[in-house]
Image (cartoon, rainbow, N blue to C red; front, side, top):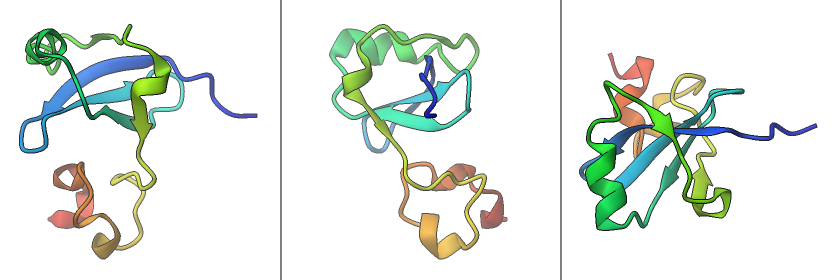
Length: 89
């Protein structure tokens, strides 16, 4: 059974212009790659005050490699969330 994902906006990826989301059930990370200006501006407060994503599940791209679980830095070296990888040192 797959997770019914309940997304929270938790940050922005400034270099790539993405919103960073996390599922409150399974903690998987996803992104919104095409946020509107309003969505982008609202997300800047998310690191200190995460909020529920209401922009539609179909816009969330789920990452294939979670940096917290990667077995090899080479796998997540170019990943949008590589900065959070514990293997980066």
